[in-house]
Every structure is written in structure tokens, then in C-alpha cells.
Length: 64
Image (cartoon, rainbow, N blue to C red; front, top):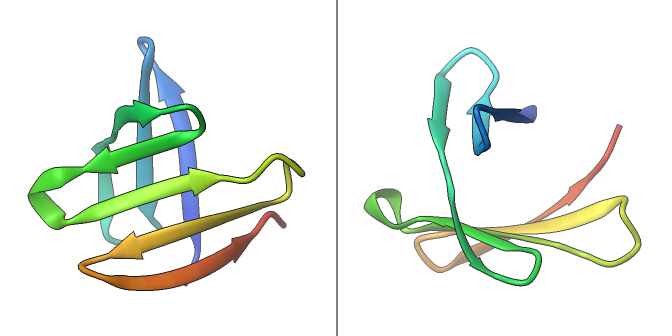
């Protein structure tokens, strides 16, 4: 699964490549959410990794 993050018009978006994109809201330092889908993303301080949580399932992400 490939995810793409973009900043458009001061709005952070997440796109599951091939599935479309949607806006995510700030939920704290380095954290963003899309409550309608039960999704949160936390960017880690190393700048290379993040954790995405979808309806209670945690998935580690690594920047390519």
C-alpha cells in the first residue's frame, strides 16, 4: 500500500494511491486524524517514519 501526503491550500491530505485523497485534521503535535474513517496518523520525530491507526489497527509507515 502506498500513501501520499500533500499540502494543498493549507490543508493536509492523505491519499491511498489509486483510491483518492481526503483531508486530515490536526489532532495534536505531529498527529492528524480523519474521524469519519476512524483514522489517525502520527509522524515520528526521526522524519522518516509514522504510525497510522485505522479502527484500532496500527500500521507502521516508512518514507520512501
